[in-house]
Length: 250
Image (cartoon, rainbow, N blue to C red; front, side, top):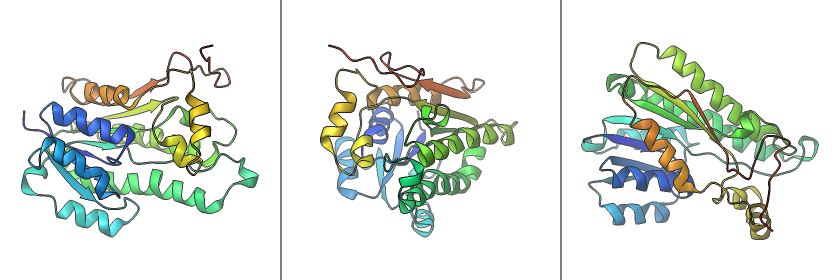
């Protein structure tokens, strides 16, 4: 196998787990993120021939372009793009939300994702590759305080379907993966580092873990080329869409 995957948000959570999954499966991996110290362990674990760390803020269009232009020759043939970088900020209802946080979510989850996809489309079309966008069940099921975060993920889901339509006949596959309750750094980021809030959310719930989503991405990306999974919604058994009920162990 001589395939290359480009993963955004590779410094933690889903992104780091996806990078490890594909590197272990002998793919070459471009792992991106803002924190070089979080990417370096991946390089040390698998070697610079297997993982290339591209350090930049995905919201910085110039830095993104420079990072793509600076890819080593052996990492230029992108066969799969995983748009994983994204975040939720704040839990307040819209009328009490922080507008700066709304803008940051839109810039990261929408604008940056679209810009990177646009930049890599020529290569992905040439190589009949795959695009996997990490959306969320928040794209479909609203909840109090979800406001702009849910709206940005609805964009990701709809953008995926739009790409699928536009790329008809090119051989490029497009999938939106939409996780439910997942224990990563997600809630810590959302609550500005409130560990107690994070622990309370996941306690006894047996949530999705990063490796579960890595397995799903790997499955989608390695399907026979005549198959496309349009959307994949994943929840832990403890969670349902009836008001986002969560059953907790006693």
